[in-house]
Amino acid sequence: MKKWYANFRRQDSFFGIVITTIVVLILAVSSPYFFTISNLDSLQTSIAPNAILAIGMMMLMIMGKFDLSVGSSMCLSGIACAYCLSRGMGITISVLAGLGVGLVIGSINGLLVAYGNIEPLIATIGTMYVFRGMSEMIMTGSVATTLRGFPEAFVKFGNGKILGLYPMVWICIILLALFGFILKKTYTGKKNYYIGCSEFNAKLMGIHVKWHLMWTYILSGCLASIAGIMSVARYETASRYLGKDIQMNIMIACIIGGSSLLGGKGDMVGALFGTLFISLLSNGFNLFEINPQWQNVTIGSILMLVVAMDGYVYLKRLRQQGKA
Image 1: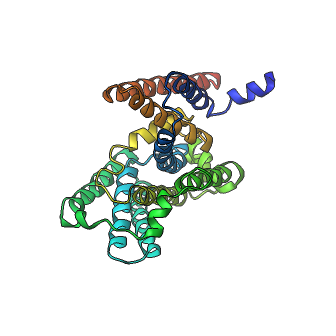
Image 2 (image 1 turned 90 degrees about the vertical axis):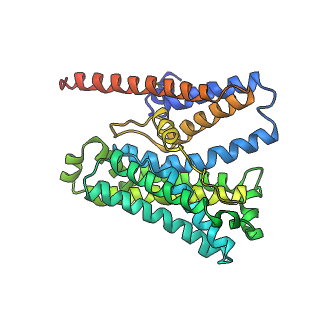
Image 3 (image 1 turned 45 degrees about the horizontal axis):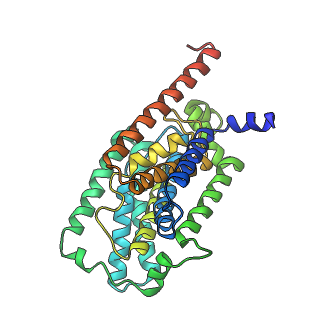
């Protein structure tokens, strides 16, 4: 038992699992509405898109990078899909159009960061504002009022249930399992950790760092578009507020789940539990009708605590290696 617990504590996702479990227990005990069907449905539609965004963000953060444009990618991809659907272009073409938007945004981010050597903060803030602005312009015009009346099969995909779960949740589970396997069991996934620990050493190992980084940004953009398309299917409309200001919550979820701004650590279990924590916290504030401003204070405080702990562990490791 001691050995199992020691191994569990060494997992990157240990803190995220523990704190999420505590929040679930508190909500289950203190609110009679937590396990109601309507509340659980609300949690599903909150957790699934966020967890899909967290997959791409975690892949980048393991390499010491990040993507602040995921909310804008999510929004514009959803709008593109909704526009095509409302013009009768068919579900397949419409979904591909939405995915294409995510691929383009991811490619631009990858080119700027990997080949343009621009800091991720500057590059992805720039694309965040550009594509959020494009979404705003589209949705404030006459087009916005026509982005409705989607095919029945598409609406059913967003609102139907399989074994009590929405299709977006099943897709989320499949993607988490797939990328969890890729990260831990394949050389392609392990490249993320090698790059995050030391780009210089990764190059010596023969890893094409720029190319791998480029494709990971494309992956992040495509995952954001999947989240956007599924949200449009669920709510049966596109909105200019889709994914607004979500990027920081996703980053915080990844950090709480065991990732680091310095790179080299993190996994999909952490991405899931970090997302669960953020969604459950928001849900708890709604259940107890607490001013949402306090949610930002709470999440920000937890972020500072986790980052401080991460910095302490990093400095301790450097001292043990005689580098500090």
